[in-house]
Image (cartoon, rainbow, N blue to C red; front, side, top):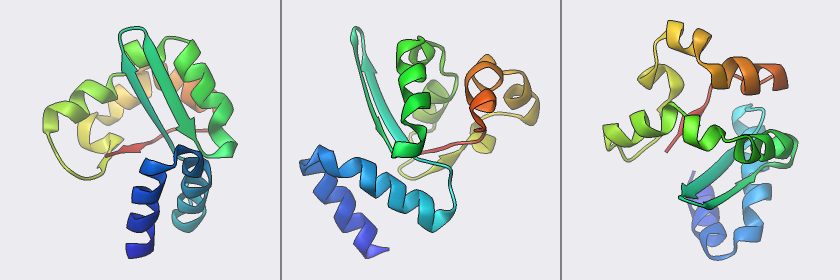
Length: 115
């Protein structure tokens, strides 16, 4: 695990390292992919493992950042660690939330974790 922490710090200084780090994490923990995005008013950026780059692009260009129900709930927890969708949403919310139905599930994705 310490090798991952070291790589995270390294990628924080050298952003071009994130895609490979995300892919390695995805392979190690059997995820489809990993991504990180940030949004502030007119500023939107994101980076992901190669396999889900198209989904991240649709997330950013489709206005999902503003409709992302997970972000405010995760922030409200004020938790320094990873949070699963199931920690912040009910099964019914996950089933009915437009982001899952219109963006994630059609791309073969579903649940997520967030730090």
